[in-house]
Image 1 (cartoon, rainbow, N blue to C red):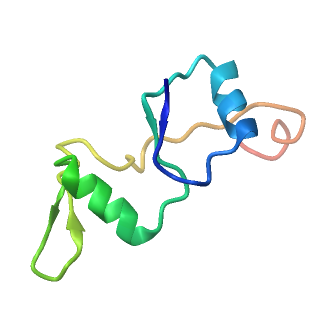
Image 2: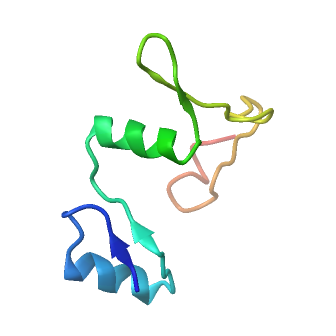
Length: 82
């Protein structure tokens, strides 16, 4: 049984995630910024720093490398990109 933590979970939303085989034990959806911060801090996903902001450690490998570029070859790009 899924526990709904937010009142913004509709029957349509529930059926859509079920179609993908997603069966969460809790659903947090459309939370306010304050609710998001409180939720993350209570699950020890981050800490509230001295300014009141949520601070998280995202790990060693974050962001994208500027050298990682992918171009899709299709009818639009085949004659315009070298």
